[in-house]
Amino acid sequence: MCGRFALTASPEEVREILGLMELEGFPPRYNIAPTQPILVAVASPPAEPGSNRPDRMAVLVRWGLIPSWVKDPKEFTLLINARSETAIEKASFRAAMRHRRILVPTSGFYEWHRPSKESGEPLQAYWIRPKNGGIVCFGGLMETYMSKDGSELDTGCILTVGANRSISEIHDRMPVVIQPQDFSRWLDCRHGEPRDIVDLMRPADEDYFEAIPVSDLVNKVANVGPELQLPVAPAPKKQKPASDKSGDGQMSLF
Image 1 (cartoon, rainbow, N blue to C red):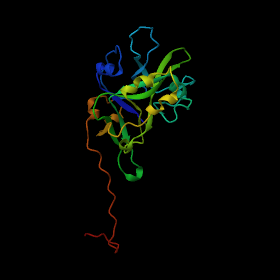
Image 2: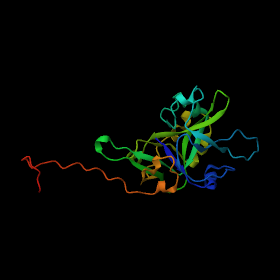
Image 3: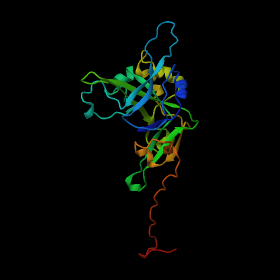
Image 4: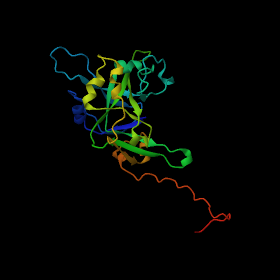
């Protein structure tokens, strides 16, 4: 899954990779958490003939998708991720997969390795970023929820896929990565069907990401500084006690 991510690139860098005409300034964000506003790119409305307006634009949505048919959001599970394998059929995501696919620009994401209780090993956080740096865009979905009083709230989630071999050592899921050459096809919901972009929902190449052990500072939403991404030595694995092989019921010294 993807429960925290960061966007520390400059607005100019984000505007360039997404091909936007303009983008308001924003500060670097090192610990983006569910329910917070996130920057996403969506397909622009159809342009007038001869217009040179970009075919995508940036909007802010709340991270945590609310399907339009939900009656009370307070009683509905927060949907920060959607499994790509079932999103086309699942009621919560079906309409968004067909009509409202988005791109979520990030500098990387955080994941936690959660060993079994039997192992005795501690939880370890990782900062996972592209090996070559830069911005990575995750595939996502968007819904506009209308409350009883008529107010509207744009919401979104990130699609996930089974992790590649390297990331699976940390977690069994990872975000869907959409490459720049596929941005237009991913966002184009006016032509074709969701089944036509299934090939884009696949694990990233083995050498695309690097995973850096970091401290547990990222666990607290209040921590928002660059120190969250400083490398730390991973917690040592707990060694199993040596078994007694002396055969006489006493501990052997040799």
